[in-house]
Image (cartoon, rainbow, N blue to C red; front, top):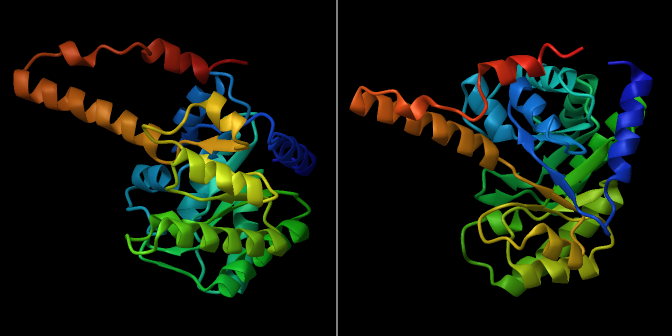
Length: 278
């Protein structure tokens, strides 16, 4: 991608983080899903680490080789003129120095932003200073590349097994959010949090855009706007919907010997058209 074009996309993506109007991001898992979502009028596209990993034949959790993730991300970027932000898990490295190198590689794929998480496989959190150093390393990679990517710092407090009370989780999330913002993050993502009042409490005390992940029962976009949410993403849910629909249709076909379940509102010609437009 042309460097000036990537910089312009990163700046446009940053401007979309307006706390008065939430940014709704569909998470793509391959080039085709990204193209489908782009045609629907979204302002930007995110990737899903789980969806990308599954499409490559690996489990989520940095099991996919970094080279394959970067290549898949580059294909997604190539298929749309929209800004693309990559779910980069915890940076694919054991040290901040490795994270810096790896973030440089994903920036090289043309992204306008990244997610960087502070959890360890949903069973523990990194020490806060270590996690903050990794955010700082990602910011340094962006500065070295000359691309002002948006760093969305994921706070995994609500992904841990039950144990901490809600007040304790909120306090820890706020402490971590402030550390990551000070280290160079632009946005905070308390993944797994869906309670309206807790989300509202965080938007009041964290002076930065907050990203929430969708799930059934989450307040709608209008209510999220009212409580100050700046960004809403779908994580793995659209990929799961797509794979679930394909599995159910294949199961019905195998069980019945009939093909009634194979009708689709979006057919071959529609999908082919997305990739033959000039």
